[in-house]
Length: 161
Image (cartoon, rainbow, N blue to C red; front, side, top):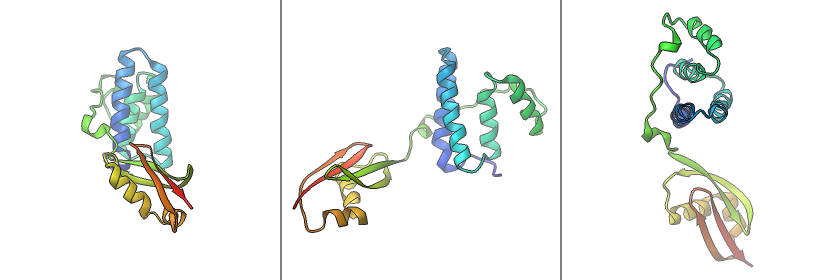
């Protein structure tokens, strides 16, 4: 399909490059493969891989399944040997998700899930939660007793009445 990394997958690809490299150095093949499975599942959910995404996947898989990855590498039109190809580089700044999904609860029951900036402040997260139609309906006409924001996880609004 396309040539580069898709924005939705860029953070995951960079984290995977970092984790697999570190896990190989620490001889933790099982956790490296688990991270690769997460990447493969994300690629599957997106309907396939771009050429760049597929190439980096083959590079990361090569230490574990060299014969298969070499064959696939050649089928992509490469003439060099994958085993001697430079290990992919990751960008530390891109290893961090820019947006996260948080749950919004009213009296302990999940009413919505919101995608917000990863570094969102408590007041902004609570305001975004209250602006959601399902949450607004759940708190309409009630007195808010408490508002709690658990960073990166959830907003909980306790209401009376």
